[in-house]
Image (cartoon, rainbow, N blue to C red; front, side):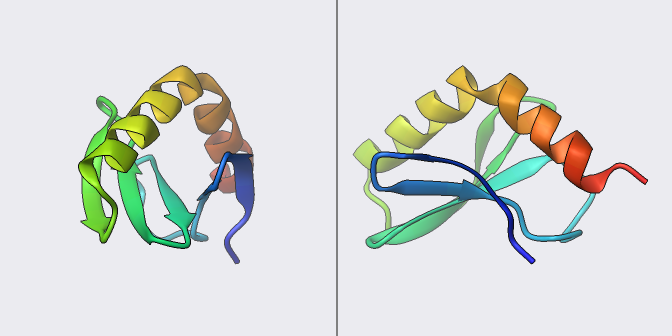
Length: 79
């Protein structure tokens, strides 16, 4: 199960179900994908085929939507 948290332009922001405990979000678009840590700070965990410009945009979007992502994480994974 990989619920979508939100979409922005060509990017899909989503979780994998119970992949690991540290808060993070996955990002997918047709050019590649990335994994971004949400805690303790927003930072790139993994990048597969995305340009540095795309990664910078993703990091910006995650920072701007961090509260929404954390709330969605808590709803999805509590209990």
